Length: 252
Image 1: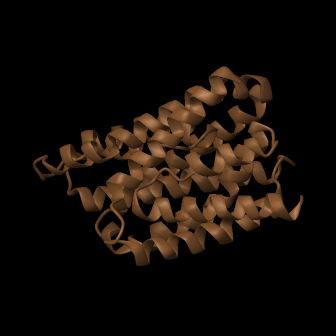
Image 2: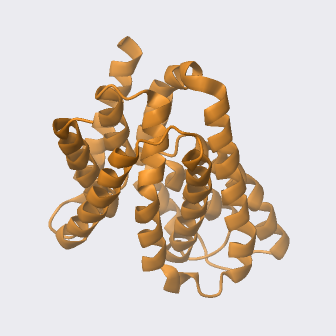
């Protein structure tokens, strides 16, 4: 791969890491850049998923203290997330390039919509009364978590919003604790999908390594810029980019 393309991929991944640290939606930057560079959509999605693993791990470890007392949920939801991610990854590899390419603009549009409603959703969930949910209700929440994870393994952008919505609707807890649980589920989903992709022969390893390093640097930069940049403005910039990219794919 040419140095110029790698430089552009590095810049996109750095921007995605920064955006993820402040507002979310980084995949709406990296995935379109990869495809616009001529990388087939399935290969771009597979490479993007593998490259995201370190970022998901970092986000999960950063909030691990908030997982205290949620051991039972972790035993239910991490396997559900992993199985869903596995199923979504296998679905992607077996449905083929043509079907995925046709779905790409719809998936990007959905991801942009999920990013747009993410913050209002968090505010709505934060207003919920915090009390204890029954063990049965918590166990049954594993079903929609697993279904959301299938989407995450197939494409991934917007997964965090879907999982947080599922947890917020089905469980009774503070938003901060549910957000930490969401990070763990997203990590399990991403890793399971990445394991499948490792053996698919469709990972662009050099691009994935560059993206992983750049995203970590971008995330660190985003952490330092927290409070200086308005996350709502940044979020809507990414939403607009996502909608514009979706329109481009529709008319392409």
